Image 1: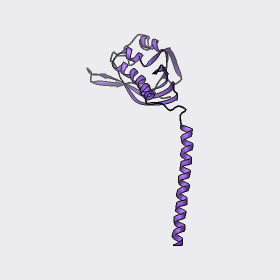
Image 2: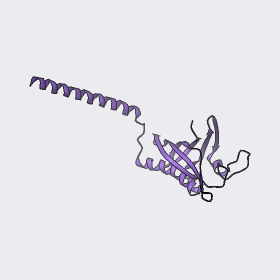
Image 3: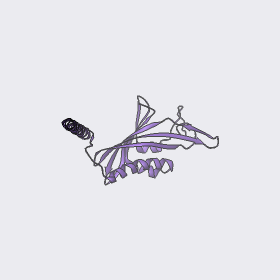
Image 4: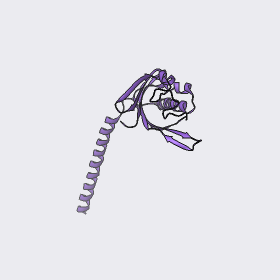
Length: 182
């Protein structure tokens, strides 16, 4: 009987130590990873709507919808390859047709007139404050040629966005578009 009591007491003590250690570790991890601002459901819906407006604007060929994703003074930072960066105002991005290596205008980035499908693959948002958030999301462009029954897959990339909330509305203030890997 005495042996059973020592065993049970030892097991209870070990369980308490493990629970206390786990709770301590969880508290330390939670406080280190906890954001300064806890977003509301409206914040989550708002940042998703901003990013979706851009994607749907592309897919529906609706520039007005894309405009709802960006603040008028937004900037686009394009990184077409490692070590190369081009910064332009968002509005210039909408009006400047892409050019081929020889400088001639082309319809899309692969040099054809095939409209791409823009596949947004995942989204990660972090909120810094009630009016500032960041977004990281992957994309892939696909160019289906139904006549030739072929598909060209464009280079993969990702977006690094800074979003800002004004008068209850979230929009992108800065978008960095990275092609390929860093």
